[in-house]
Length: 213
Image 1 (cartoon, helix red, strand yellow):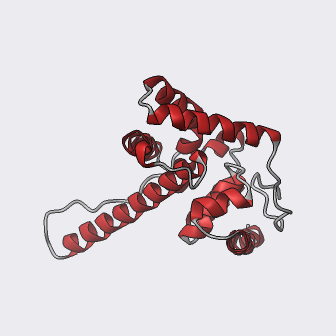
Image 2 (cartoon, helix red, strand yellow; image 1 turned 90 degrees about the vertical axis):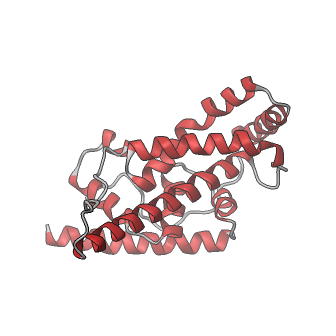
Image 3 (cartoon, helix red, strand yellow; image 1 turned 90 degrees about the horizontal axis):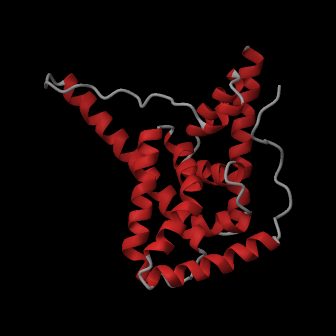
């Protein structure tokens, strides 16, 4: 059975490529322009990162509408707070950190609202029970519509938050272990542990699904 997302043990850490080094220099220049109030620089920022941020949030929320809203909120926050950015982390790291943090917060809020609506309905109040957010076409599903992919995505969505973010950033955004550690504000060994546990969990569930199919 073939899956699009690799579930093999982690490979060695990724050394920075020439493209990444050039990208870092370009981002530093972009930050300087943003802090000087350049609207053109902000448009460049959005064009450079909007697709990556949107797809990251979509992977966590599975709702195109919510992902679009969160992505817009991320860029609004960057526009409003860029003056306080001191470069302790890379620009891309900051963006991914904002995006994943807002996505997880949004998901927690949605679950809280759903529980509240459910319990108030049990108590006889005239509230509509909020239903589960429907699954929407995931970007990977455009390439592979097999049932196995949907099973994988469903299990990824059930991983603990830190594991899910690490797995998404590694296998969908192809960030290095060092970049993921920066986004999660943790260490590379901690990222390795998160990814190892995520892969082990997914492998167990997928093997169980294959057996029952």
